[in-house]
Every structure is written in C-alpha cells, then in structure tokens.
Length: 204
Length: 367
Image (tube, rainbow over all chains, first blue to last red; front, side, top):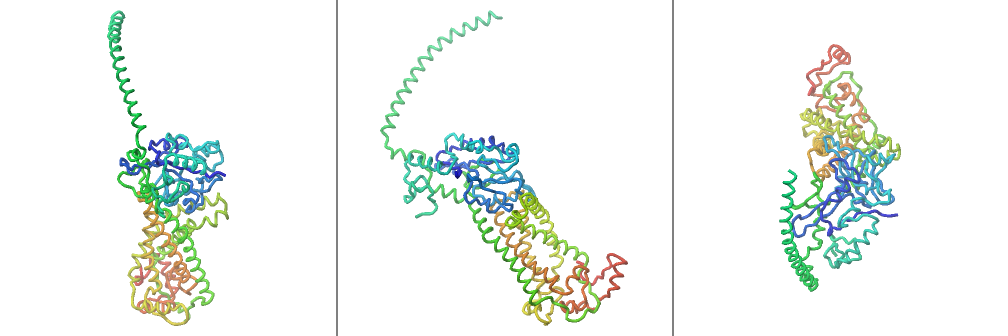
C-alpha cells in the first residue's frame, strides 16, 4: 500500500500561493478557513525561504493521539482523515499539531469552535453519499485516481504529493542535480545524500 | 460627415506610413544590439567558473534555516498567508503537550482516582464506619443554614458533573466508543463537552462565593495541628478537639482555595478562546487544569466518603441543617462548647419549619 506524503521543496517555492487557491477551489473550503498556507521566513532578506504547509498526514499523528472523541483515522494510503460527526470542536488537535493544520470555523466563548476542518489530501472523508462527502470534506480526488490539486498545479513543482517513495525519488534526483554534498538537508558534512531523513538538528 | 472622416483617415494613414518606416529602422537597430549583447553574455556564461557562480547565486537553504523552522520562532520578517494566523511554522511545544497529557496526566490521573477509591474501600472494610459513641440526646444544633446547604449541593452537583464529563473527555474514548458504538458515543462526548464548558463557569463563580463565605470558619488554628497528629480520630476511640471545622475540613477548604482556584482560572483560559490567547498558553492551561482537577477529584472521594458512609450523623447536617448534640460533642467539641445552650428538640424544629420558611435562629452560620 502506498504511504501518501506531501513534500515542499523550499528551494523551489516562490510563494505564489497557487496551492492555497487551488485547495480552496477544489474543496470548496468554508469561508475563513485555509487548509493550506504558505509561510515565508526572513522575508526580503538574503536567506528568505518559503514553504507551503498543510496537514502532513503524519505516521504517528499527534492529533489522533490526543483527540477525546477518537474521530481521526488513517486510510490504507496513510492519509489522516477525521469524522466531522464525531468532532466536538475541543481544539486539542490544534494544540498538538506540529503544522497548525486543524482549523475551526468559529472561535467563540464557551469553547464554541464548530467542527474542525483540515486538509484531507483531497481524499474526502466518511459520509453516506458523494454529495454529503463533498459538502463536509471537499472533493475526493484520490477516489478518482488523482493527486491533491495543490501539488498537481504547483507552478514550480515545489510541492510534491504522492507515495512517499516516489516523492523521495524525485527529491533525491533534484538533490543530485543540484550537487549538494549533503542531500540539501544541511551543511553538515556527515550527512550524506543517501540519508534523506538525516535530522540537521542532531549533530554528529 | 462621412466625407470629412474619410479625408481625415487618408491623412492619418499617410503620416502613419512615414512613422512605420522610421520605426522599422529603429527596430532593426535595437534587434541588432540585442543580438550582439546576447552573444557576448553567452560567451561570458560559458567561460564562468561554476564555483564562483555558486557564490553569487541565491544561496541554498541551510541548516540554520531548518533550525529556525524547527524552533517555532517568528521574526519580524515572518509571513503567513493565512489571514488571521498568529502561528509559527512549527508548533514546537505541541509534542511536549501531547507527551505530558497522554503519558503522564492520563494514566496517573486514573491511578490517583482509582487508587484513592481502592484505599477508601479498603479503609471501610477494615476500619468501618465511625459510629457515635454515646447515644443520641435527641437535642439538635443548627450547623448549616439553608443558603449554605443550597450552595453546597449546587457546587457538589456541578463538581460531580464536571468531574464525570472531564474524565469522559480525557479517558472516555478508551471505554465507551467500543462499548456503545459511534452514534451514541458521538452524542455522549458532545454532551460532555457542552456541559463541561457551560457549567464550568457557573461552578467557578459559585465555588468562589462558597470559599468567601466560609473563610472565617477555616482559618487554621493550633488545635488543627493536634487534630492532624492524631489522625483526626478516624481510627480508634480517642477524642480530638475541633472547632466548627476540623483539620480535615480546613485542609479540603484550603485545597479548594488554592488548587480549585487554579483549576477555575485555567478553565476560563480554555473556555474562552475568543480572547485570542495563543495555542501555547492553552497547552499549559490544559495541563494545569487536568492535573489540578484530577487531584481534586481524587481527594473529593475522601470528602464524600467521610461525609456520607464514613461518619454516622454527618450527612444529616448537610441535608436537614441540624446535627445531633452527641455528634457535635464528639466531632466538634470546641464548637459544641460555644453553642451548647442553643440546642433545640425535634418538635421545635418541626414547629419552626411549619410556622415560617425562614425561621432559623441567628446563632449559627447564616453566611
């Protein structure tokens, strides 16, 4: 089975926000919610970098671990989805999520947040009919054999979506072409191009 | 009209032709210059040293930048395309919160509450109920006014509701989802959240009212220390001196006045996200709230046991308002000395109740 993953090649992202728009369009996302966002660090400086972020469909998803209603589940493709019928809008997934992916339509007194909404990897969610699924979660492109629209239409192909192995292969190829000694993950000489999961934060 | 415009057209087109001829020359010159310059630059690129070029090109993303991402810091030049987002790229403390909540608070809260319940059961089985030693005299003393009783039972009901819904929010998913199925579980957990969030603030306000109205009776005294050293006389037949509130009651009072207030304060932080407090603030508020509330729930089991099963004659004080003279003498000797001349008989109480609803003597607590 595939393990679906997003990856944003920060050296390619030009913060055009096309992915954000594509997502809103493909999934008819509720007003005020943006399932994908583009973050720019050091804007206007020499070391400026932009990354497109949404739900990263973690293997060990913190949202899943802390949800009081246990409304999250993982599909066979490794996509983290949630059941809006079970969601009570407590906000715990937002506290735990490393990427700020879960969002709520409201933020009112007495913890009234409404039902959580997040990126579904364009895989919809649990519903009785196609119409209901679209209404609640947006489109189910995965069921149609398509990848998420954000990555499909990324103009610089900075945002990659697909099976983790394919994404890794594409990125590895880019790294080799770019000629970074260390797989473009860090300037640490001990990291090698073969070890793409090398964590730059841990030296040695 | 038509003739006039036609003439104007022909004049314009004649001058246009001259302009176009001039433009052609200009265009050809510019094109030549462009072509030549292109040729030169191409040569320059071909001759460039790739290492030197690397130094002038836009720099690659470095480890420092990834470290910056990981740290969750947001500088002045941080941009987020989400319109109201005040969040960093990486929620660095989220995993810490998750680990504290799931690895420590959940299991140890369960152990604290379950352990206390087990200890109380064991205590009850071994030591048993504390009976009155002397027979009841039948003379009664007013201990709790109607207002205090109403306040106590309201706060108690709210406390139990909040404890049960809170526990359901923390641990319910491990039991009830598989037990009842999704449809019932969805209703159950949604009701838990709504009850918890709406009753919480009422509990908070009423608990503070109760704490304020009982502070005089709960100021620690020297004899409370003696009470503690003798274990409150819970085991055996020894008598321990106590005023209106004994050492144990005062400890429960001050626990509520400290931990309880902390739980209420953190609860308000969690319950009102409309003030735009950050994710990190709510993570800490959640941990404080959960630890405090689980601790209070565990201790409350002791309070409930002593007030009901554990002590003969204690519960009637909080239900009818009156306690027996013997009970007062045995459990609150110093208070009894103060009020022993105010005893009333059952008949007098009944007469008072039938004559007027507010016929309570002024000698005892009305606060």
